[in-house]
Image (tube, rainbow, N blue to C red; front, side):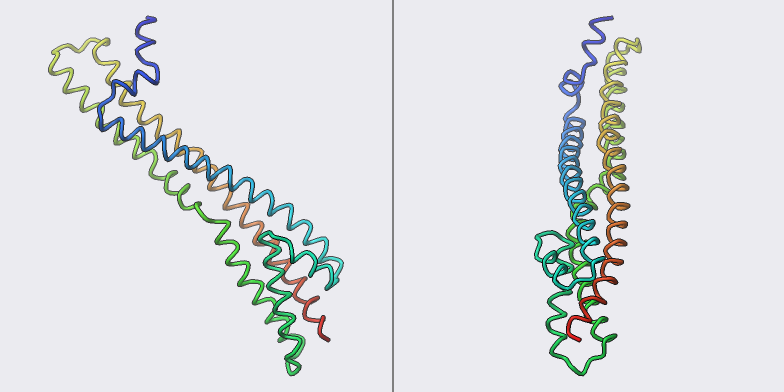
Length: 221
């Protein structure tokens, strides 16, 4: 019993696997490591963006142009959005022929364009998580199918169907499925979480743009 358990540990399963299954497992391992790096990076950036928008909302609530200009100098995605509005406000002040509504539309349009660019930067590498979440189980399944085929060939060659002969090969094959799921599940969960978080951030920023746009539009009046 102890010998059987020892022969089914992770290192032994990988060592005894076919070269195709090994490549499959290494691919999944590399993808999993990269996905965790993306997850950690996104957690840090989304948390920082969430903190920053809280600060910006408080300053915008004060309806002070000076406060918005001070915050927009910050090096963060949402600060860059406000910076675009402040810069457009400075340009629009010289356009005396514009009405207040036209000036506000220009400022808000500039901020929305900046928001689109910042959101694209925040979404970088999220497609990788989505791809790994959908393709990971199938990559693992490929290794499983290949390993089981190899096991059946070995069984036929040995002409022995006892559990001791069958179990190691089947375990090696199923290990690929387990690896595929281990890589895919965190990627799917993280992708769904970040999509929701970024959607909420975008919604809050749109509301912030509306409040800030009216303040900045009145700066030149």
